[in-house]
Length: 379
Image (cartoon, rainbow, N blue to C red; front, side, top):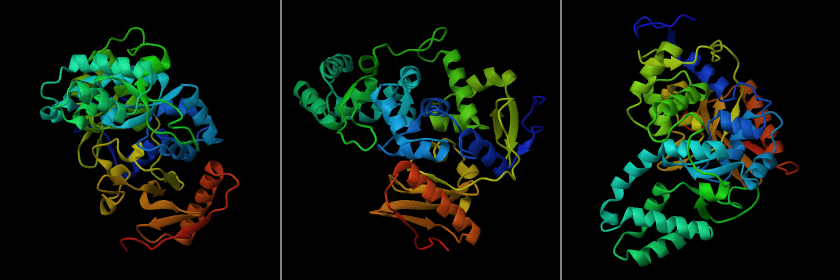
């Protein structure tokens, strides 16, 4: 495809075209025959504010997935839970943990500006050394860290001290936290200590705002979430001032417009399926990155349903029908309750039920669940 030189002359990708392209890259048009680790890497991590969402995310995307596969990766320290993109907890491969966290470190430092008053008089360099010594001696809970730091700075705000520890250091949640069907409170140590090697970029890439490192991040984002605008990528990463990076990459990319005129960038050989490609139902966990990684979410969230997948800080588990947000779902004891936002046809209900049965068989084999459609919301 020939690269266009102006936004006005770039081909237009409508909402359905963007939807199908994004679903394809998110492994949601058809389940991929990938190992769990390869999928986590391709997706540049999975939202993991809670323990179970990464498992549900992979169950929706992978052929032959079993939750034990991801749990084994967690136990073997091949994947970890750490605060990275958008200052939220993600499950990343060990390599991505060590390379992505330095990329967003500047954003984590700026985050501390919100807590400046509570950190008045706190020597952040000293705090960093103290926290590293504490958590590398043995994993610590945040309560333990706040208590230890409070003894050093009794006039500081305990919450701010905890945030400073999390922002200043790449703290990972150690297992058994994050394992399937295991319980465990959040205990933290440094990524370097847990993984046995330093944070930093692969050979040939530098730390901080090195252009090459940012370019790699843009290319990986487009491979998993494109076509996308500069604002989209900034929303995904929680970074700013990314326009110059896209401009440096422009000769390597193709450009489009969405139906509102925004310029979209993409990899030349990335899949962009026909807008009429079939998209089967999918059950996604709360905080799935599909719904959080674009400034303009119209490619997945119809305007009439905007805001319906969350209530305040609480995100609902979401249902996709024909590739778009169509409802929410929740387990209630031994019943899976599906609540569509609008009427589903008989064929759609059958397809949704079949997908629900498949999800339950993957994640809860042998368990007996009823599937019930709840009251239709927003008729």
